[in-house]
Image 1: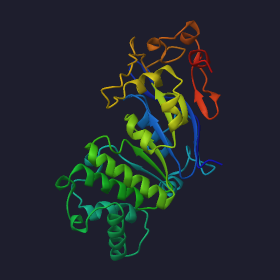
Image 2: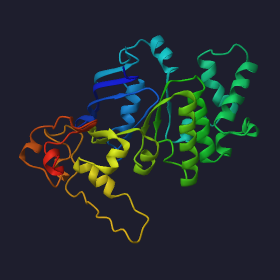
Image 3: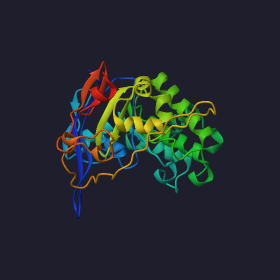
Image 4: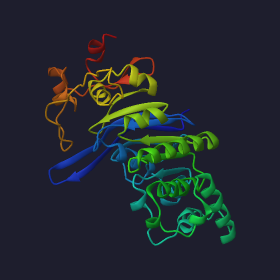
Length: 319
């Protein structure tokens, strides 16, 4: 049994022009100790998906099971107990940390909320352990977020998430606000923590190079829909969905001898508000036919472990 099971998950937001379909009928499994990367353009529903899974945002429809236990309709006390096992690392550490609290108190806060230790000394001993684990020097314990750089602030966010010994962590673009050299440090830290603690990650990003480095499997989202899912290495070797091909063609290759053919996605971007029937990508797809504008393609397995939502995936890729 998978650690996390998501079935037909939907999230709609009310707007003056009608419901905005942020997440549309998404289903997947996440195995224990693995990393599932979620990629797509900004606004495709990646972060909303993570928040709905954690219960930070309510679902419109669908089912989320964590270790076989249904989590969508939990009562507040049950939800609090589950939060100890499911945590999140936010995209912007500066906006997610209380500027009035020092590093020691920021990391101690989740320990106090869950009542994991009886005395302040025990809590601060645990804080010192966590700071050492994430590579924060002890001299920063009384510093405030504005006094630290982005990399150290993100390490605080990681320490807060790890404080309650979770089993599953949503990493919501944890390195997108950081310099490239700092990104590598944080990614290596996350991988080390995964190995030592057996963590499972839902890693949300729009950076394809990052997701290739850290993920076991990758799923691609477009306007709230899951369009492709497969092992990470296979996605970069054999992308099947036209949208995935367009994304991968945008990755620069650092070689003057290798000329890469860029796939330009022209056409009008569909609106997620009261979307029309059919494939969301049809208006930008060079292979679109009449059925694409009428019927939403199902997510089907076209190769071993490789799922794609495209009416003509087999014809386009000659599978």
